[in-house]
Structure formats: structure tokens, C-alpha cells
Image (cartoon, rainbow, N blue to C red; front, side, top):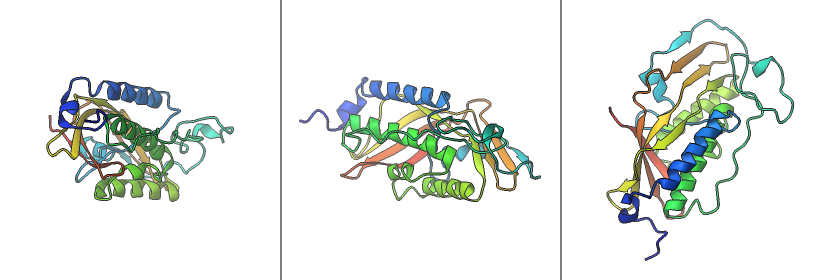
Length: 237
């Protein structure tokens, strides 16, 4: 049997997620450096990115407080990354590299590379409103996630932006499958805060104060050509 093909035995092995844990730690470090990207995942009825709004008490301003300008108060020189703030969206957000070779393979390696690309490109998308690559990792059936991406794209196009919103996932055990085709990976979602600024300057902010409601089951399926994320489901604690 080809050892690279995913099967129940290899996925339930203790070492199956060793490489994945390392790669996600690297993703988290990249997000912490704030020069790499920022993201969204999803669940039936809500996405992980949007779950902040559902699970946290928001701070909100109904009165326009600012208009879109430059983060940091001025246009950043070419190549200088500046995170978003109350004055404007992030500037010169570095584009993630193309997905690693072999990410489409129906293998543990392919699964890892797909998740890595999804996290990095999703973090880029939340800072820019550009979901053109991020959406390629999402199943067409995952409407909630695609709808969230559409809302963020529209927000940026209309002159709004997002402050913070980046996240990381830390593996909680190995993936498993009940049918040999669809695989579930349980992971803890790390995030601090997200603020949605509307074109008129009004805003909503959600903080992750207690770290609760952040365990998610991420369901992926290989469609014969590539891995696609079908849903993310909040694990009740």
C-alpha cells in the first residue's frame, strides 16, 4: 500500500499531527509578527471569524468617528508593512507564497499543506478584502464561509476595513474519519480581537476575553483533485 495515501490507521496514529502542529505554530508566529497575514474559518450557521460577534459582547459606535485614511497617519513607503488601526486599513500586507507543491495530494502531507495555505491566505484576506485565493480552499457547499468572504470583500470595496482579526489554529490530536473520505481535524483557535470599521466610521469590536468557545472541528474532503474545507463546527465546552 502506498504509505502516502491517507487511511484511518495512519490518521489515528499518534505521530500523524506532529508536522501539522509545527506548521501551525509557525503560522501563529507569522501572525504574531503582523507582517504575514490574517483569516477566517467557518461553521454551519456561522464562520469561526464571525463567531466572535456571536459569542462576545461587542463594543459599538453608532456615530461616525473617522473616515478611511492611512494606518499610522500617513502613506507607508513601498514595502513597509503597517497594521490596520482606527485611521485606516493595513498597508503593504505581504502576500503569502503560493501553496506548496503537493498540497493537492490525498496524503497527510497534502492535508497539512492545504491547511497551511488556508490559514496564511485567510489572514491575508482579512487585512485586504482579497479572498480570491482563500476561497479556492473552500467547498462550494460551505455557503456560510463564502458569504462571510463576500461581506468582507464588500466592506473593503465600500471603504471600510478590519482591524486585527488574524488567528491561528493549534491541533488537538490527530484527524479522524468515519467514512474514509471526509476527515475531521479538531483544533483550538487562537485570536485576540477583531474590529469591523464601516465606511462612515461606525464600528463594532469583539474581544476574546476568556478564551472560551474556541475549539473547532474542521471538516475536509478530498474531491479527487484537491482538499476542500466543507465546514467548521464549534465544539461546545
